[in-house]
Length: 295
Ligand code: ARG
Image (cartoon, rainbow, N blue to C red):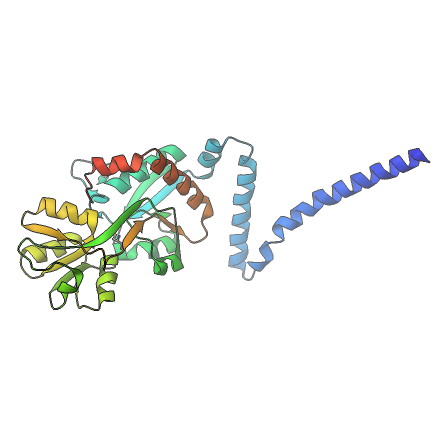
């Protein structure tokens, strides 16, 4: 009787183990039907599944190897018109001809993750569309995290804090943001500077590049340029006769982060780990010094 009971118990255990084993597979694929509305969605679901399987296989390896195995190539999109974060260097930069803080960060990320990194230099306005199209994997462009942008893309942990400032001629009477009323204001198309001026309710002219707006100021066709602090610092260093006017009451602080396609958690997680490391060991602060950012 005891023996029979033991046998029954053992059989029962085997049966429940088997149930467990076969139960786990449908459980994980059971999340997918929500997505499987169209054949395209189905293909996407399969892709997701493959990635999950890779991750599961890699989970037995050490963390570093796991990341390296997962991401082997990153195409970063930028707009190399934004010193000291990204600019074209005639003498060669961190990645090909591209240099600056962001380019050095992208390069380091590639080295750490064992991924091949390349740069796609496009208009600032087109970066988020290019990301959604899959033309690029991530945007690294001194890009400020905004609620509006968060609707269409996912952002990493911020790596830099900035603010909008005004650049004027040295003899300008503009002392605060509201002094811009009635003046000729120049901004750069699609930048948060444009959004700030729009919010203040002033008219403005928008330019494709920061240097175009600065030229307008130098030529006396504009009275003020509104742009990010570190870039403004670079422009006034390069162009004697200009100064920076700050107004922290009107211009809130902004945070730069890298953008990835919505839902690309694999890349987002990998980049976040990198940013946290670079903030913790002061690598980004060192880059700030190297590329001379004074706030
Ligand atoms: N921080 C501003 C923004 O996000 C300006 C960024 C411009 N970056 C560039 N690479 N051109 O709108």
